[in-house]
Length: 245
Image 1 (cartoon, one colour):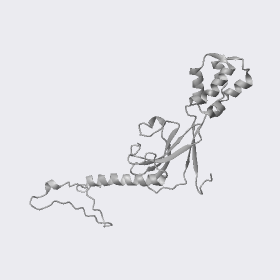
Image 2 (cartoon, one colour; image 1 turned 90 degrees about the horizontal axis):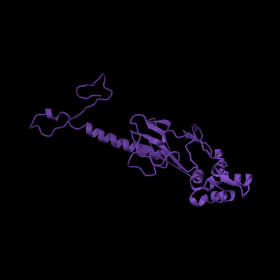
Image 3 (cartoon, one colour; image 1 turned 60 degrees about the vertical axis):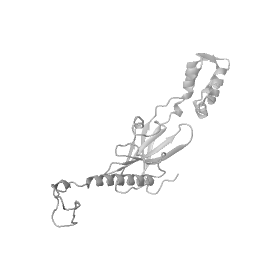
Image 4 (cartoon, helix red, strand yellow; image 1 turned 180 degrees about the vertical axis):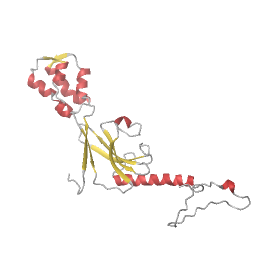
């Protein structure tokens, strides 16, 4: 895929995730302590019928090493079969890569902060680490809302889903957005702007409720408070007594 003009890729090595081979776990729990090589081969190759990925069976090289290094009549212990696995090439390393070709407005600051897997549940984020990763990419400079990039993948099946989520000022998944998130960051920012506007409107309504009605005189009709502002007026009209700020 060609890189957009002017784009800059930012990468960070996150190390290897905690990963347990389902195939090796099945060998440890479901097989006797000793068996002939032929039985071990049938057991390993039949693991696909038990939900083990064919890629894991193939890439572990257990079957290949058993056929290459032993006769069918040889009796091997469970530990010898486990030692025949070569999982080092399978161990993934996680790389956080962000593309800053998208230029947000001045209200949003760019960032690249990975949300730890142990915080997913607390923040109402679906999926578990490392199959599901969330990276906060943009944070509103004033109100604390943020936009996170969500990626959901499988370590063996070549597919990946990605979407954009709106996070509230507490860093949790904001309500009133699609369950799968948004397809583009622009859609997510537009939704965040709408949510912030609603929040500001509610706050403004609460702030503009009558504050001095108890000092009004009876019999003068409906009570009202007016705030008159004079833009670009010489000098200062600020008053901490009546209108803070």
